[in-house]
Amino acid sequence: MTEFVVGLAHGFYDASGNHIFNALRETFLDLPASTRLVEVDNKGGPLMPEHLADIDAFVMLGGRVNEASLAGSDRLAVIARWGVGYDTVDIDACARAGVVVANAPEGVRKAMAHTAIGFVLSLAHRIPDQDRQMRNGNDWSTRT
Image (cartoon, rainbow, N blue to C red):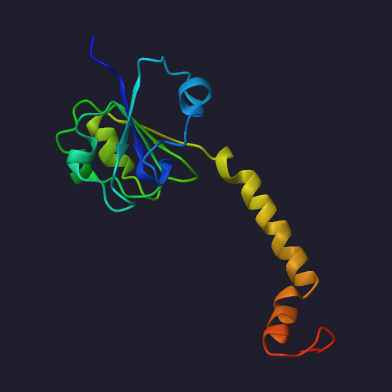
């Protein structure tokens, strides 16, 4: 049996080249220790066939997967989009190639809620207006 290889998008690696996605092995996918994790260094651009050629699964952040990306990737079985939506993945091309596509909508739900509450508080307390006034040399009490 050949080794199972999971490609991780470039964004899952730190400046030293170490993947920062340790939970993938034990928690996220319950992968066996023998699973090899490799970097797919597309840096957010369109994926080329050589990016996907020797992997069984791909966990992506950014970038695009289209029909040209899948050419010759007979080994690829799964593309997991880390985030919401499939707008960067050609679902029809993946279906024709026999590649299952999944996403992780729960991954951004909490962050989006925090952002929305932060914007509400910022606008309610006029923080952008106050910041602008301070940067222009006025005091806190200046009204716009």
